[in-house]
Image (cartoon, rainbow, N blue to C red; front, side, top):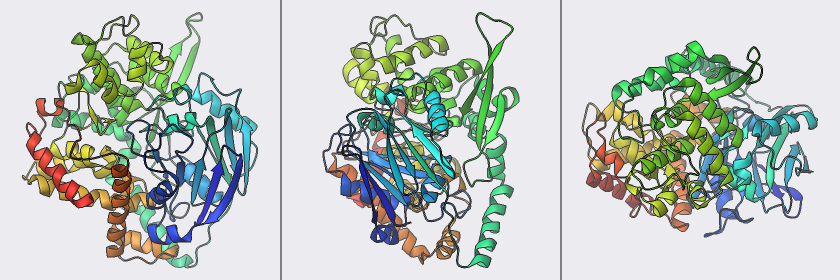
Amino acid sequence: MDRVLYIDLTKKRFWVERRADLFERYIGGTGVAIQLLKENCSDGVDPLSPDNPIIFAVGPLTGVFPMASKTIAMFKSPHTGNLGESHAGGRSAIAIRMAGYGAIVIKGASASPIYVSIHGDKVFFRDASALWGMRSAFTVGRIIRENERGAGLRTIMRIGRAGERLVSYACVTTETYRHFGRLGLGAVFGSKKLKAVVVAGKRSIPVSNKRGYRELYDEIYKSAVESPVMKKYHDLGTPENVLPLNKFGGLPTRNLKEASFEEAEKISGERFARDYLGRRLACSHCPVGCIHIAALREPYEDEPYFYKTSMISYDYEPIYALGSMIGGSDPEGLLKLMDKIETLGLDAMTTGVVLAWATEAQEKGLISEEDTMGIKLSWGDYPSYISFVDLIVNAPNDFFKAVARGVEYASDIYGGKDFALAFGGNEMPGYHTGPGAHIGFLMGSRHSHLDCAGYSLDQKVLVKERLSPCEIAKRLLDEERWRQILSSLAICFFARGIYKPNVVCRALSLVGFEFSEDDLRRIGAEIHKAKYRFKIDNGFSLKTIRIPKRILETSSPIGMLDERAIREALDCVWREVV
């Protein structure tokens, strides 16, 4: 676990360092990644310069216990200008561990397009000129897969044209259906002329106490396959959340003009499972299989009796962002838009919020059809949205260059700041459940719903009892700090109810780490402060963060939100992290 692979793209060289100092203190994953980022990224670095490193890190339970299946990517975000952190499932974590590394640090930039191929102790710098500019990220993955030889578990992490064109919310696709989605890792790849990273390995991981290992493994596995929550994720996937959130009044609709969607059933998990589900997939070493793939059959224009079938991954967040958020209820239109976004290599959540802002801005006369190159946007008009997305990547005029940087930037230029739904520069996730959700988006180190699950606090606690702003902040802060431990172990957050502190201590003991529950909570707080220190050193402050006015205008299930209470909660967090 303590081997860190360093790759210099400028000089086309690589080396390995032993970093037991980091792994023994910060465990792995997020804890090690933030330290490596701080070591290799100076304050004030341009996120699109060669000096912005890419860090990949995995955890000590990866390849050993179920659902320790995430790879942590850390970088300086070109989208927000501060901390970039994104997690992806698939095979990437297992491949990195089987290749013999706990972390990979990619520095510098190539003068011409390349991809990096890591086969255990060997690293190859391959010419990617023929892949650069290729229309589809899917095609890029297929070509690399067919040309890269070697046994073992393999991952192919690659960008589409959005990353090449430096769209600030471009993603990195891995294993076709998983992503490092948010905060613009794809643009960082593009700035380095890095088309893809291939990792393959075939090591095994020894365990000293085999009996204790088997007992705990079976316990975790049984908890996963028998859990009602995990059964829900297997049967319907995260889209199961569409109807409950809609009924609760927490489903953002038409750029959060409303919080429930009259046609939610048409884009629900139940509807997709009944009419479009083609197959289910699982990340490596996961028994749940929450990845749901839709099979969309479309006739060829010239051959009406011949059909093509597209396989499109769908989850709750893309359905919210490309469904209710833009007033869309046609499941086939939604899938076609999702497929376009996947092909180009954009983050679906950010793109959906951009489309929603642009629709309302045009509705209000802030932008014209001349700005949008003749496209008239209206809620739920999927053909127009598909054309618009192509132009985000091609950026043929100043307007599309602006929206290629997100709603925070575009609204600075064209107006509509009150309904530009970004938190710390990162576009809104699919939850308008109450103050917990929005305080969480604002204070979270990634400005993500996965930071501290404020939506869960809204539904489980705040709907029944009233907490003061500082009490809300404390609960969210405690949750986020514990999540630093889970992400340092590279545990999928869906398994957070299984990997409770006592289970984590037992699992770590079996792989050579002796920590008490108090130790873990202390380490989690230390990692969280390190992440906030990086943000602060790069100009971030909760004192000046913008609260989107729209969240105060649309009633949530907890009632109308109070800006003063939100500010009070943020002040409480700020005192803790500074």
